[in-house]
Length: 158
Image 1 (cartoon, helix red, strand yellow):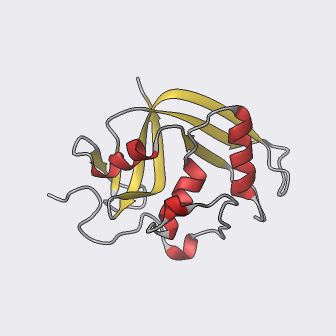
Image 2: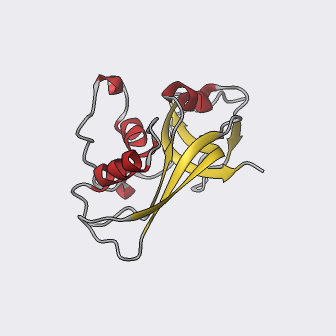
């Protein structure tokens, strides 16, 4: 039985499909030892603050310098360690990734999230979003070396 995320190096998406990525302005030493994919995961999908102002600021940073606005993004408002646990907690469920890889895990515990979807009148440099907060959402992530590198999907708790 494979322990979550570590038996073989794997990618949940191909290198050639990666979009150009600019680091956030406030990158910190908390990323020391992290892969580029893990850093991107944290910068795009994590923010303990959940105010509309904080979420909109994060969306501006995600889109900074890009030629198009990101159509949809989910931000998880849990502590980093709680999110990391999805990759290593035995109660997390190993589920197939959308691309067929086997390194995706659905966490057992729900997380508060904000889901942002691009507005119709949005344009690069002025990306605009409708953002919706949800309090109890199951999160599935792709893991490499026991760390999250891609937000695969979310599922509302029933």
